[in-house]
Image (cartoon, rainbow, N blue to C red):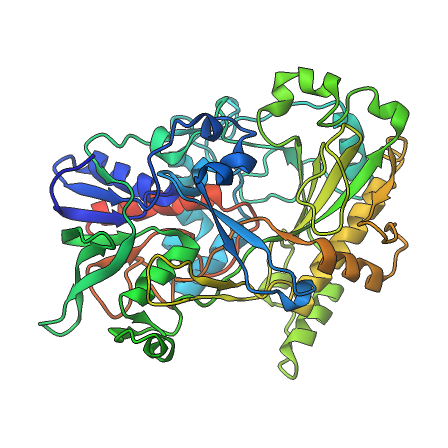
Length: 548
């Protein structure tokens, strides 16, 4: 859609957050002129986008950008592929559709760090509710919304349902009737936002009256510096188009691209900018720093041949006959657990050196440290595996929800068409290595429970390596982590509240410029990031409409 080149609000990036903000601003004040500038195409109704199992194929049609990391020292110098949506709707159009809130302690920590209760769990709760139509009509109305744009679902059942649940109970997890109520610990229903197809933000939220410009790669932001503090006034694209903002510009380009745009515009670490001949507008050392992401280690297990004939996994004809099995990831239980305080404290102390770790450290409370996800197919394999999707294998993934490793996003060049350089520094802390090691050992115990043992032959290692068991040494488990751990594609933190933006998401050192996407997260959340991004965007739009 084309129209004027001057708007009251210009949203750079029509991703998950950008579409929400645009929609809510226009709904809240229909007289506002609002534009979205989106780098990718408008393919929100593409068959692979709507298909719950189409995510893996989206990079083949140019709708899923791939950002290779630099070599990761603590993952055997492997380079990992990071994915993000290159499409109107952003990553909400390319992800696997899980609907998870973090632990209330996560958001309360945000509030503590920012000094603003808007970002506490109770402060965000109205906006979590505003975004959703909860799947259970009998659900807790104090915790859930029932008329929001995103329709959630749960309850898809698979043949191994009883055995998987039984195994989780055997290793000490308890049933949790609602993981999305601020306390995700335990076993709960796997919630998704399929209805029954994908709901990209640009379809779920009404964008009528919004001017949408696709194919819009940003060269830089323009500023008026005549009256002291620089004021953001416009956006220049690489094709020469220029857009002017009468009120504000909002960056929603995602955790990789938002810091890139800021730095190309002269906002970032001055030393780095000067190396590329970019004049510093605001020396902001936090831009591109504080990158964190969720890592997952996946164990593949071979099914007992006789049991596999019952149609237990993807690739088996019986399993594939049931359309419900293919309406999203092949999983049905969220299993989220904490870890022993002593082991965590020792790991944190090893990272802290001479600085003493106190018992009230944020990560030593009963936190949602990791997630055990059982998938009825081999998933997210690293290097060296020779496993087919043949109905003979399932996988158990362990995700580190509260990583302490921090990486960065830096400029490759001053050319906006060049992808940024991404170095997450995965697995670089004792804490993160402990969490994955302890999580894998727990997953191995789970696979050996009375409930699951009749179905599983054992761990399938990379070719030429030894299988793991619950009796494997720490070194053996650590070796597997380095060989096969993969990103879960939840980057955040690169324009963090308190460092790059204030608690109203205004970029420090300038006026007329804000950021709204996962880059503003100050610390991780114990969940996939999607539901939190929706809540942050809802809260942010509300903040603007109220004049803040």
